[in-house]
Structure formats: C-alpha cells, structure tokens
Length: 165
Image (cartoon, rainbow, N blue to C red):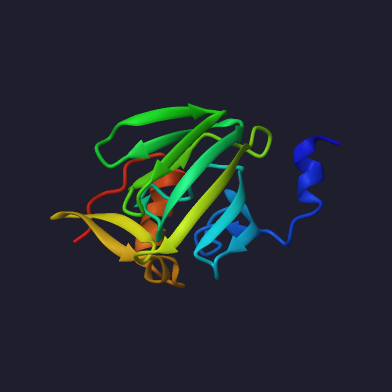
C-alpha cells in the first residue's frame, strides 16, 4: 500500500465536490487539522476530474496549495492557462478566480491545502452581457439553478458558456 493510501486510512470521512450532484465528483477533500478555533485549517485534496462547470470560482479564504503528486491545468479569467506539476507551493488570495482541469480517477492530483480565516463568500464568476458577475455558491448550486445548469452543459458540450442576460 502506498503512502497516500496509508495516510487516507487515518483520515475522517471525505467530502465530495460535485456542483450540487449535477456532475460526477471531481474533488474529494479531507480536513486533516483545524487549529486556532478554525482560523487555520489543513485539507488533503484529491482531484479526480475537471471542475464540473466552465464558470470560474473563487474561495472564501486565502489559501496555500502544496502539490504532492500529479498535475492540473489552471484556467484564469484573462483566458490564459498554466499547467502545474507536483511538487509546487503556491498561495492565492480569496479573490483568485480560476477553474481547473486535467486530472482523472486514473491519474489524480493530490494537494495539501492550508486555508486561513474566511474573508468573503465563496462563489462563481458567471458571464453576463456586462462581464463576469459574482454568484454565491449556495445560489449557484441550488436545485434548478440556471447558472449551474448552463455552466455544466457547456462543459459537457465542450463549448464556451454563452453570456447570460
């Protein structure tokens, strides 16, 4: 059994990230430790797919990402992409907008993520005629959400998501 498999056997139950169950799970997350009353948390992430939507997302907290194994491609708001291969150490403000692609269940990407205190709501940046606008995650993933449905459909069709009125 490999080191990561042995480590997983000691972890609490995992969370599954899947855009409100609209898409197959693309990220598993385990909280390893929470200290200072939750002001600092450490997670183990296992990416097993591309983000389930074409819409960019941000995070509620500053975070540091440490690449342990594998790779992913990051897509940014300006249209640029960059591939990250482990090992790496990166840090981002909560407002960093991106989406990821590349990993698969057969070739996952493992990261250790350290996050600080929440400074904003987590959400998605959705294209409207006026440009990208923030949609909070609870609204985005809610049952019947046209935002998530459009973003997921664009991924399935491998097409850019059209602007929304």
